Image (cartoon, rainbow, N blue to C red):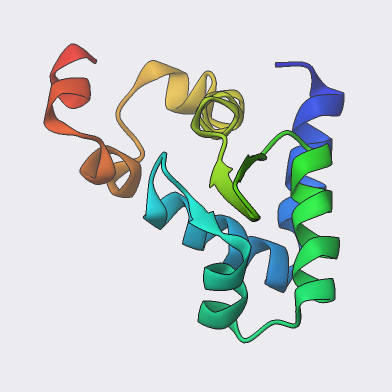
Length: 113
């Protein structure tokens, strides 16, 4: 990952509402949530949600898809994975120093490391 891409992603997440939106989308999984469900869950007006989702989209952290008259948003898990890998690259000289992150890995991924 290039540093300018990492900076853009971190800048997009460095705001309380955007971080809450992104975390909600991560929880929702690959199917994502429609805009109304996100707005209701976080108590956001539609215009505010649109503004913040656009920032996350520009940073490639969120994808949007139209289904009928609804727009569904989902987290870009590949981009999130790349950002986390970039942030932890060469961490602790290759040692296991991230116990919280390791605890959250699916068991299959943990075994492969």
